Length: 152
Image (cartoon, rainbow, N blue to C red; front, side, top):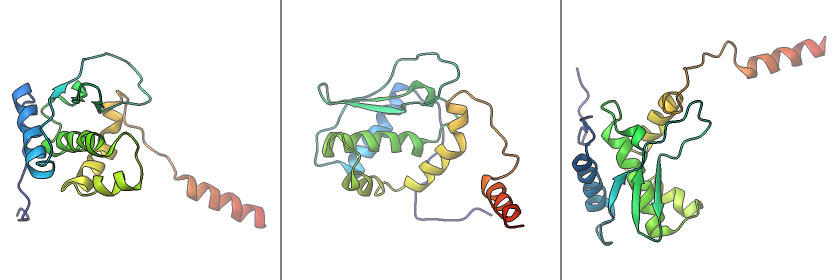
C-alpha cells in the first residue's frame, strides 16, 4: 500500500524542451518568483567514454541562461532530480558562483533535496558511463583487522 504524503508525486515522462521549460517554470514559481524567469535549455550532447566527472548543469552569468546536461534527457530520470539541477543553477543566479555555507543552506531548502542526493548517489555510475562496481569488503573492516593483528 502506498504511503500518502503532502508532497506531490512527480512522474518521469519523456523529457522534451517543453517538458524542461515546465519543470523550470515550476521551480521559478515555487522558489524564485521575485526574480525574472531564466531560460533553461538542454546542453549539447558530447559523447565520452569513461568519464571521471560530469557537470549536470551550468549557469552562464553573461547570458543568464541555465543549461542541463542532455544525459538527463531520459524517461528514467525523475522530474525532481532535473528540478534540483535547475534549482541549484537558479541559486547561482541569485547568490553568485561560490558554494559557500550560505549557498549550501539555501540548497537544502529544495523540497526534494534529500531524494535528489540519494538518486544521484545510486545512479552516478550510470551517468559516468561505467559499470556498477561491487565492493568485496569495506575498508574499515580491513583496517580494523590489520590493527588487531598488529596487537598480537
